[in-house]
Length: 195
Image (cartoon, rainbow, N blue to C red; front, side, top):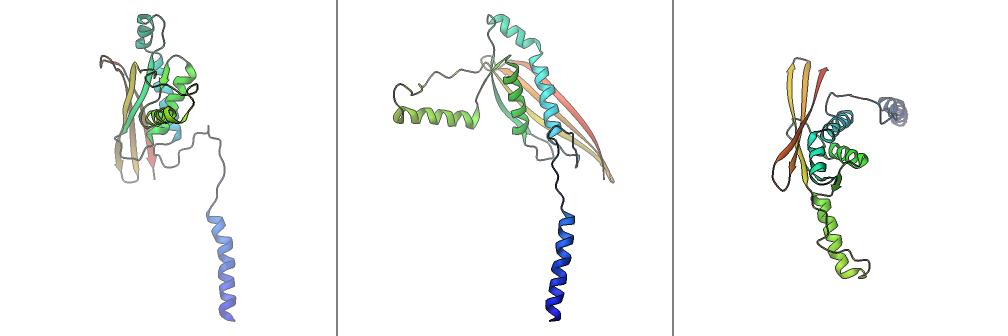
């Protein structure tokens, strides 16, 4: 009998203790929240915005439009390599950049990588499984004029319970036909973290 009462007492105590140790609340996705000092959604958004503003405000764009009779350049977003000491999901950052490109309507954007291969696979499937009137043809893709690629680097300086984390994101825009780099941009973020 004592064992049963003891078990009930322990379970009752856990019922009050466990919920008080775990709390979740929703926050506005636009709020700037930095709990750990590591790369986060705010860093990703700020970096994407600044680099997008840089790339779309540079002379390469007006030169291209002048040389091509006002035509919009076609870009493909390549790979952003994470060379930092942290796990950084570069795809989220690149999606912010792609969204900004499309929203401005200053350039045209084509699909790359695995997604392009999936679209090509669907087009191949349509050749045998779709009606002739709705089947999409091979060889009609829009070719990219430029490719955006880059890397994320960090430098960490730590002493005792303090550290400085320095992030540098570099993007490059390369003319696919000539292999000429027409733009290089960077965004730097420096964080002081005290534990």
